[in-house]
Image (cartoon, rainbow, N blue to C red; front, side):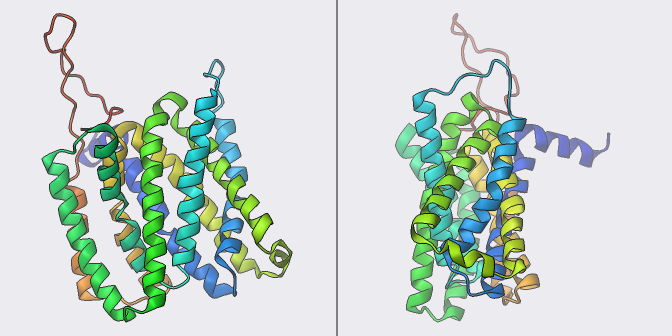
Length: 328
């Protein structure tokens, strides 16, 4: 087995591989949304409903794949947590994000949205008192220096207009909601299981979005939309919704919420290049410099083993690799 294969196997075991896949899938969502807006004069709620309508059968398929004999029955508390995850993670976060993408570029949207790793760290400290390591803080500082460079440059190009600032505020609200989803997922994924949780929380969010659309949207306008809008909605459902949610759950179960969120800083890198290739958005030296800092920071994020807990005699237990445990 060569070095690259060994490294890939290690990344799959400790969750980093799944965190990178999730970042890649989520990074394409903004591009698909902008392509959908360009294909037809479609509203944010309508496009989101198409995405979640296409995703619902896929989430139900995940639930079918996750079926296990003897699996723990969901308690009322479990059901409440799942509904809350669906509400914060892929209902509110998606709705706010789609509103923001009406006025900001895909590259700028990613740079704002990926403030959520720092929000995860802040919420985690407030809720559990669990502090990140010095290495993680250093890596995050490098990442956000790069994000700051790209953000200021893009806002200067956009002209600091009211519409762009309002769109940026919507995207920031999405980042807050998504950070809350990360914290909640880390609290329940070990009990419910990654695939089962992905199917349940995703299905709940689809139902919430479709109910919102039926109540306040324009369902009668759906048949008049061109096929390209439906195509981009289907791509969002598969490439940027269902698969990344599953990969995120796998990564969180191995890395923990904070480390998985930090790997999400790869998303802006991938989105900026994809928006340059597919949408024709500008790519400048300042953006490339900021993205280089993000990449350097992400490469410094490596899971550290937990210290072995003492046994009943007070002696430390032998050190054992625990890739599924949260990294402090």
